[in-house]
Image 1 (cartoon, rainbow, N blue to C red):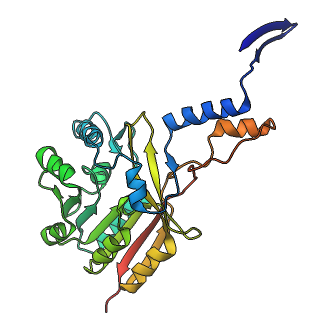
Image 2: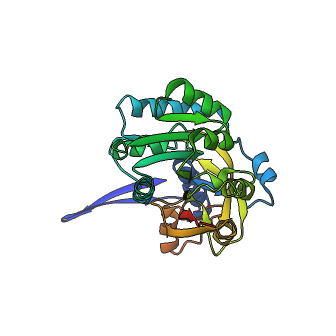
Image 3: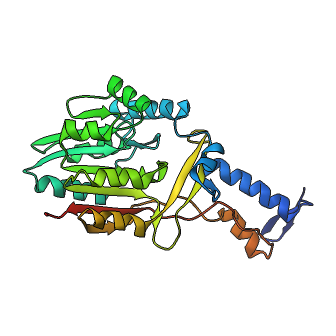
Length: 304
């Protein structure tokens, strides 16, 4: 690449001349994009194929980062954490908080939550300041064994507890509501887990931050986490929203609210590639990179 500087009255210009091909530039942009953004490879024929091409969700680095981030929140060095990323400024998921408070208002200002797939208490720590006024608050996180063990060791207290089993947590807490936030898509058998939960008859269920849409077939991908968070990859489903709603109705649950949580699950095409297209340079389709909004539902079980 050569750089040429030239000046005219009132104008200074820098001109770059390169022999780099558009294809090479495209590859460079994609590589840099993957270093800083969530990307997806696929689709795959089945979950096992996606698992074979990924490191898995139980990679040690994930737990280590989650413990470090949660410590920062507990010690007051961060406001909250999400997916091991710490945030200094206070923020809330307004649909989540609104429906939790609604459930408490229906339960004599008491709120007992089973948080399935809740890491080390991410949602609890993010929203607890708006729930401490309640007459009762219990929050039990259901997680993988190594997460649950770490949670019990460092973060369990009189309000927050941890369990390795959904059945155990429900028996222990007798919840008013079960929270599924960003978890169904990471289960090998999401429909079986959902059926099992719905059959237990918990009065309220909140399905939040779920990768589901009405207009696509269900298919697995491999999600790659950007290096700025941690180096990891794991299988993930892009679920079909119609199938999820069929489960709800079959078990007597009414959808009181369907909403789109903040944020997106991925990005379709690296923005710099759009600039190449603007200049008339051909760009191949962005394989495995999709713009995917989250879906959410608040459910109440009808009296039978």
